[in-house]
Image (cartoon, rainbow, N blue to C red; front, side, top):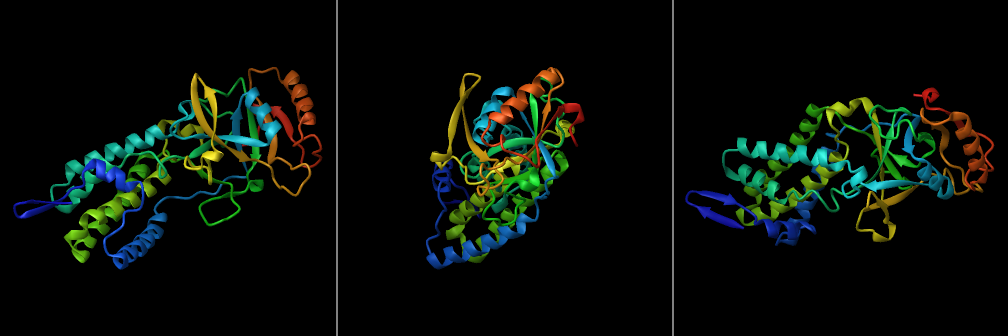
Length: 342
C-alpha cells in the first residue's frame, strides 16, 4: 500500500494485513514476476545460509533426565523434544526473541527516512516471532555429564549418546536425518552480527527491487522479504543463549518434521500444572536390528544419588527393556557423573 506524503513516498503495510499475508507466501500481481522474485530470493537464501556458523557434533553428548524420564526412554526408545516457546519449563526462545526485537528497535532509531525506514517499521510490526518459522521442538544436550547451573545435575542421570550412531544432519541435505544437532551460540557480538547481516541482505534486496520493479509492487515485495527474513531469523534464534551460560557448553537436537502444523506428531504432557507440547525423537540405531539398539553409550549417575544402589537398579531395568536387554556390544556403562567422558 502506498501513502503519498508530499515529495516523499512511504511504503507502509498495515499490521493486520501483514500478519494475514505472512501466513502464506505473498503473491505478486504478475505471475512471471512472482516466479522471478522467488528464484532471486531462493538464490539469496543460499547466500545467507553461509552467514550462520554450522558445527559438527562431538562423538558424545549428554542428555539430562530424571528417573521417570529415563524409565520412559528405556520403555519407548524415544527422547522427548520440547516446544522451544510453549513448553515453559524448557523454553529456550525468549532470549533470542528479546535480542532480535531490541536490535530492530535500535535499527529503526538509526534509520532516518526513505524505503529503509519503512522496511524496518514493517519488519518490527510483522516480526511476530511465532508460527512455522519460529516454533521448533528441541532437546537440550550438553558436552559434559554435569554442566554447571543445571537443575538436574546431582539428583538425576546423564545419558551419554553416541552422536555418530544418531541419524542427524549439520545442515546439509540428508533425507534420512531425524534431527539437526547444532551448538548454542553464546557470544552476543556474534548473535547481533548474524541478525544485522541477515537483515541487511533483505533490506538491500527490497530497496533495489523497488527501483527495478516499480513502486506498485513495493508492498508485496516487502512482504516477501519480511517472510524470508523471519524464516532465516527463526532458524538461528533458537540457538541464541545468554553469554553468561557459556559454561554449560550446550548443544541442541532439533527435531526435523516435528513442527506444530503436523498435529499428529505432537503430544502433550502436564508439567508444573501446564500443558507442554513435545514430539518424540527415535534413538534406535537401526530398524534392521531386532530388537533395535539404542544409541546410548553410558548412564552417568548424579552425585547426590547412592551410586551402588542406582547401579544395581539400572542394570535390572536395562535387562527388562526391549531396547537394551539383549545388548552385548557395545554395552551401556553405568558410572558416576564425575567419571563421565568429556
